[in-house]
Amino acid sequence: MRTDLVSDPGDANRPNEDFAGVGLPASGQGGCVIVLDGVTPPRDETGCLHSVPWFTARLGGALTELTVSGRDLTLPEILSRAIARTAEAHGDTCDLSHPRTPQATVALARWSAGAVEYLVLSDSALLLKAPDGTVTAVLDDRLAQLPRAARATDALVDAHLRNKEGGFFTAAADPAVAARAVTGTVPRDEVRALAALTDGATRWTEKFHEGDWPALFDVVEKEGARALVDRVRELETADSEKRAFLRRGKTHDDATVVYVEL
Image (cartoon, rainbow, N blue to C red; front, side, top):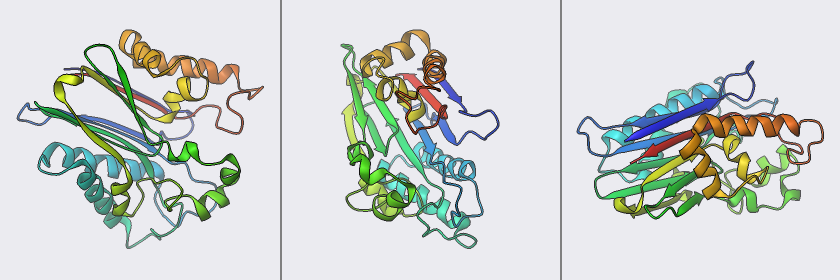
């Protein structure tokens, strides 16, 4: 197995809110990839004493341990338990019912000798490459499908869409959202390599339209994860004044790419 991991902060003066991990059980059977994209809160109160990086580190650590050791658990069960464990760590000090309590998107994959399992929640992405070169994108596109008018302000999103029916879901404090994730299983021999990415890296395809998912995978596979992030940074800088592509988005977002050859 070969891996390539890059996680680059969007702002050198702010902590990186992403989390990335690769786990290999001591038995040598299979492994896992975990990528989280912490949701940057608005400047208003979040009801929590803790930062987003604190949350993603806690949730990511729990996911890594459970995914590696809990081979009898499904990925939704693992996510549910990890969310519950993280909530317990600050439930006595923080208002976990606040819509902006620390939260994250999730891309999770686990493989064994016979299968590759996957789980995606919100707008991180998981790409699976078959032996014949076909690239399949596993996406949770509920946020992207929402009307732009409904997402006009943070207040509208928090009141009507965030972790609500008819909206979109993230890993926050409610273990039940694990059942909302996009999940599936494919035979191990149908996956030659995979890549997990936060939306700061998928901008190359989703925001700047430089190439489709197979083209993005090709960059990562042939040139490396660093090359994809560097390309995104160049595009962001070039668009920083005109905002033809970035519009109201951050100029630079945290960008994480994990590539694994099975």
